[in-house]
Every structure is written in C-alpha cells, then in structure tokens.
Image (cartoon, rainbow, N blue to C red; front, side):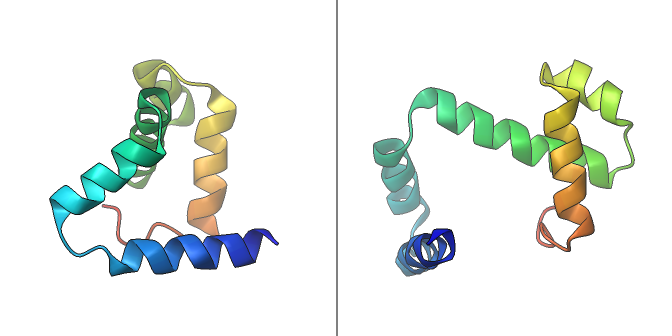
Length: 84
C-alpha cells in the first residue's frame, strides 16, 4: 500500500517541470512545519555525507539523534544518491 502511494506521488512530482510550479505544489501540500522538517532531514543527509558525527548534527540542527541515525541507515541502503 505504501509502495503504491509512493509510486503515485513520484509520478506527480516527475510531471512538474518548473521550479515555481513545484514550490506552489509543495506550499499547497505541506504545512510550514512539514517543509521545515523536510529541509532539516536533507541537511542531516548532507552533513552525514560530509562525515560529521551524529551527535554534532543533532545539536547543530536541534533535532534528535534518532532522526540523524535514521538518515544514516537510509544512506546505507543506497538512498540519497543525488544529495551532496
């Protein structure tokens, strides 16, 4: 069920070609808090890939170590290839 929903979401996102269109879509879909959380998670991934320790990332981004660890586990699964 989750996989089917992810496929539907991916299809929608892939159809969006313009940055402004994508921004409008995300603003309409997500709350400001959700946007902030997504940006934080992306920053976690970037910092993990730079080799920063989990606890330092959590402290700098004011998030839990468990959230950072989750990001690390997802990187180990081969996700986030396009995030540098």
